[in-house]
Length: 68
Image (cartoon, rainbow, N blue to C red; front, side):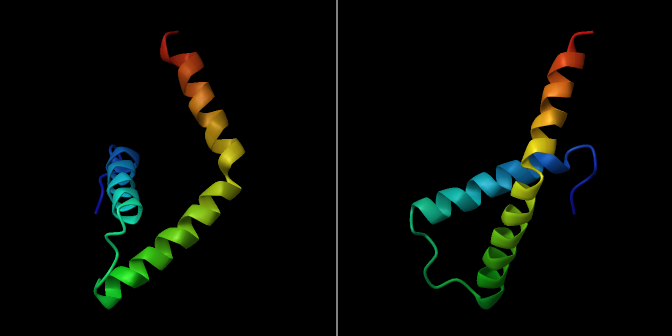
């Protein structure tokens, strides 16, 4: 379980690791729960893309306010 203060950082690192596995075709012979997890990741990614504009706004607001 991720702590709220580091959930996005930890999750981004884990997603990067998953992307590396996909890019390196290291997805053979996974356990059933890993295939289910991969399916969940795809579903979450599709949902996250629905919020792409809002996520970009959040990032831009952060950058604008970071040095105020």
